[in-house]
Structure formats: C-alpha cells, structure tokens
Length: 333
Image (cartoon, rainbow, N blue to C red):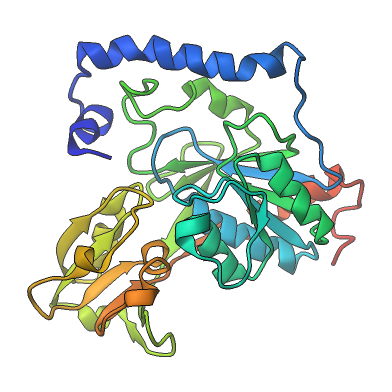
C-alpha cells in the first residue's frame, strides 16, 4: 500500500474527490460480479465435504495466512484431514493445480507455498477456485479451508471466518478506493466468527496474537537464534506483506534497531532488492523468505510466527464443520 493511501485509509486524511467518485464504480463492479448468483443464473459449487472460508473485509494483510496454518493444524488435531484452496496471488499459474512439496512461489504464489511448507497439508491453487477445491476432495481431504475467499461467491461454504486487524480495524470505513473496505462493514454481522488480530477485541470477537520469538537462517534451517539475541543491534528488516509496519514493530518490541525496507504485498524479490551496502543482518517475514531461499545470503534470517487463539475457538469451528458433515461433534477423535 502506498503512503498516500495509508494516510487516507488509516490516518484521518480526507479522501480526494476523485477517490470518492470511484467508490460507486467499485460498488457497481462488485454488484455486477455478484448478480449472476443473486439472480440464480449461477450457483456456488457445493463440494462433497464441508468448506470453511478465511477472509477479511479490508484490502491488504490482516493475518489470514497464519490463521489458515493454525486452523489446519487444529483441525488435524481434532481428527480432520484438511486441504487448502487458494487463488495463488502473486503467481502466474491459472490451475487448477495441486502443489508439489517443492512448488515455485513465482508460479503458484507465496502464501500457498508457505501453507504447504508449514503444514504439509494438500494445497491447490487456481483462478477458478471451485475447480481447484475439487482436487482436494479427490485427494482425500474431508474439509476444505479456503484462503482469502470471503468475497468469492463461486464456492459454497459452511463456515466463514473474518480476520480484523486489531490496530487498524476498518480504517475510515469507506469502500475502495476511498477506503480499505472490499465490502460494507455490515458484512461483519453475517460471518460466523470474527477474529481480532492484535489490539483489543470488541464484544463477539476472538482474540488472536502472532507469536514469534526466534529467527531461522534461510539457507540452514537448523540454525536458530532467539530474537532477543539481536537486541541492541541494527538490522535490515524486509517485509513485502500487506502491513509491513506490524513486522517492524514486532522486531522493535525485542529491542532491535530496525532499518525498515517495505515492499508491496506479494513482491517478487530479486537479489538486488536485498543487496545492502553493509554487513548488517537481514531479517524478513516467513512469507518473504520462501521467495528468497534460492539466492539467500549469509546473515539472512526469517522470523516465523504462529497464530495463537483460544482452544474453544477451534473447538467451535470443528463442531460446525462436523455438523455440516453430518457427524457428531468429537466423533473424529
């Protein structure tokens, strides 16, 4: 996100008149996209297994990918065999494609690669999400987790999860491009679970925190250091995510002196992007690291995070999915 939009969406700068004028255009395009489904000309594809959608209302990152990873792991612990479907933003693959273990982020997108790497669960990508999701059912998945699918009407869903950035919330509350909203704020009332990532959750929201206290070298994953070991040092902090400042702030919380380098979300890194004139350590997000391993230098570190939520949240999601599959809650354990 540009600094120009950051000031307007989240810092109180009034939107320019031309931005406000484009809101009806965005609203009309959105209505046109939904019209075939609302008029009954098209129907969402109903898979033979339950579907849980993880999404948000705002453009940019809010913590969806860490939640998807945590959800996959929690469902597996509760006896499910989850698979993940993604659009594959940042990659050129049209799909549908089931990701191999060594999938190329430039082809299939960084987030699907990270989810596949972290969970080992089957992950499918495709411009047509229903076709990609169908691959997962064939592979034996008994629940499909749709990453960033809240605004996509083509896939029928049984549970909807909406992640909210606890610090930035919904910004100025306006639709794109005058504000950050993909859908009106009233959409929150229709989702099954609202998750607040950081900050103070509002009534009815589940608190989520991103925990990550160590750094891992890109070229030798067995080499690890506590983040606190970097306290008092200057480092180059690299983030090509929706909200880079969240990553920079997390490093500062460990007493690290940050030289920030913010890139656009899903940025396709090249060695030149990370060629700095000094020998300071380079710390980056795990999502960025998965695109940089092929040319990683000495002193480059990734900072993995895990989403932490109350156990009863995962229990309730699992119970909804079990009910959608016609099972007794806990019968998979």
